[in-house]
Length: 601
Ligand SMILES: Cc1cc2nc3c(=O)[nH]c(=O)nc-3n(C[C@H](O)[C@H](O)[C@H](O)COP(=O)(O)O)c2cc1C
Image (cartoon, rainbow, N blue to C red):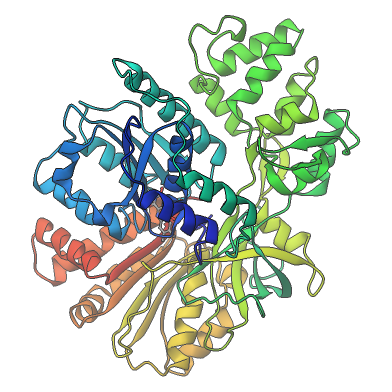
């Protein structure tokens, strides 16, 4: 799992929407609502624009403003405020929202009592600090005016976003209805006409999850040794896409979004469970086209991860006592007497239970319950794009994008399971035959130094090596004079030393300093952070000499361990107190000399 969808070029529709609501006039009788957004890649603005459109239709006068252009003190004049804010970097607000956050902190300012606000936080669960920027704003705003609980959005989960928009609108209506008698229910801002027309005429030019570029697979090669059948086998594959003619551009450090397709065997078994032949027509969203259930299950829906709502629906029409009891245990309440429980609530036991099962397993537990194809469609999550760090450089491959994919296969409840996108790319795509939907996802917080004489220190165990193979290639191609130093780790040198030969060649040519930690080849387990500590003095000297430090890979233990090792090295060799070492590292982050691209697997 990786970084987010990039809106490479804002679509004509998006521009128009944004323009419309940036200049909306004050309209007598229409309550003003300030819609602030903080975005790095444009999704926040897209969501905020949609919110404005819905509010305008509902008779409000929304004003769309970037957090960059908003003066904190003006909040005293607002009655209603919605903030849509994404999280970027290593859990920080987008650049354009950083000043507003600082202003709130420095002035100890919270939203005044007379202003009702709500926060929609955008993020991605694959990151360790899920939706942290939205959480921070929600806390800083204080408790006085909060009209709705904050909602945290995982990737582009439009159904949840739409629900939030609906709740926000309902809360506004409730508040403006009280004592407001000049409400004009028929009011529609004149600009909406332009908007409606644009909706019809507009062709969306960007590449995104919903409109990816169809890229042919031109290479696919294993970069680990062939599998031996042992439980700790690793299987990593390099896949190359041809993006010629797409107009897409990328830089090293960027990621590519891959739109996967589900395994047809998994689709078939769900169709069998529904007693469907796959041809029934369904709509995946209210405004979506009619498509067959087979297409919906193959291309648009997550057929693995069950939601609580699925259990609720199955419990509502099952006829067996044991099944009802199971539902009650999973949900923590009896669906026939919901007692105010929300459809998405689960007991702790239920969370654990569902986390170990796929949709098909859950259907199998409720055999007396039947769902129609449309009902199941409504109960499944959208199929998300998966993001992979790019392992090629446009200097040598401007029309090809390579990714390094860890193929996910595991056993759960004694059944063999597999990841969606990784097995799609490895097992179900063919060189020169398959076209895969892709789009570039910019990552401006993970960039090589512009100055080629700066040193770079890269820490990337496992598939965390993926972007660094491109970093190194680019530095070699551009004949960068700064040093390149890589810390790599994996379990076994012979089995899973990705790109081992290539890295050794760079090392032998004097283009790379390589330190490796093969954790299971020795009696005592050894990891990259130990190698860093062993070389602490040299590492410190290079950092003092202006080196940029990069970490990529598992954001769980590895990223924390590496961070701790860096602080200890700064403390010991820089002769600093613990607090001073922490401050030194924070300054490196501020100066964009310590950049991390980490995810939770
Ligand atoms: C480099 C990078 C870092 C990110 N870091 C986080 C993070 O720490 N926490 C999180 O919840 N989401 C993170 N995301 C995901 C974005 O918040 C999410 O994709 C969001 O929809 C992007 O919205 P925007 O286009 O308005 O910036 C990150 C995305 C990128 C590209």
